[in-house]
Amino acid sequence: MALTSTKEILEKAHREGYAVGAFNVNNMEILQGVIEGSQETSAPVIVAVTEGAIRYAGFDYLVAMVRVAAEEASVPVALHLDHGRDPGVIRRCIEGGFTSVMIDASHMPFEENLKATKEVVEMARPFGVSVEAELGRLKGVEDLLSVKEREATLTDPEEAERFVRETGIDFLAPAIGTSHGAFKFKGKPKLDIDRLREIKGRVGIPLVLHGASTVPPWLLELLHSYGGKLDEAKGVPPDQLREAIASGVNKVNTDTDLRLAFTVAVRKVLQESPEVFDPRKILGPARDLIKRVVMEKNRLFGSAGKAS
Ligand code: G3H
Ligand code: 13P
Ligand code: ZN
Image (cartoon, helix red, strand yellow):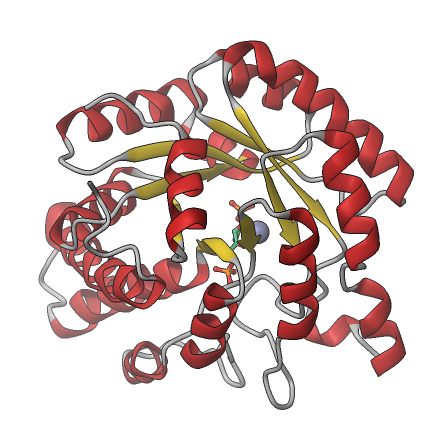
């Protein structure tokens, strides 16, 4: 089928109380693993590309691949710009067939974020493209010195209400204690679920959780056994992710866990079969492991079985 509107996919998730995976893709094997895993679990899926992915693979290549993937797929597939910052790239995505874009002006002061976001909403509307924006800051563990400082980076529910009302965005990404990458927490992982509930109650639109990788211990163990080195890596515990979804998250952004799966599979082949030099034998297993991780994710998010 053709690409499906991100809004349609997320409004259904919002009504029925589950979340849909937004998986970052940078090349064909990652995309195919994401699509195969979603088909196998009958789950709708959001393919996310960043400005970095566009620089790496090329805009036309990525769009063409995702279009073909969607046409061949038996499940709804949406195409989303993740963390859009460059207005030129955002415009190109809106005009070039993306079903949604994220404007990430979260590093700006509130009023400037609001203004920049509103401009993107106005740009996107005539094309029927939906818009996600971020409010609050996703800080890495090493950036947070005190509890007070942490509080200041998290999304203020009152501000969230005004932000959504005045910008007209379709989806909001609040900061509730996650961060990007493989090192999310130094001590005990803790998401601010009360804050999340209050935000959901005030804004009443689909919420997005960034930095939602769980960094599965089995993947980390495999990585280390094949010579990788990611000591102290820690993700969002699956239980807390489940709670966040039950409290209003409808889109779960996942990149790190796919990167881990890809790297584990490539390391395994190279270490166990030094005679291999056929790229298909190196990247094929990476695609398969990504598929497995995506299947697990879709079951955890509750999107499995929700394709129709
Ligand atoms: O937030 C999204 C990604 O994990 C960062 O991806 O390296 O393609 O910008 P990137
Ligand atoms: P992770 O680094 O936790 O996978 O987060 C990805 C993300 O938020 C993409 O926007
Ligand atoms: Zn993100």
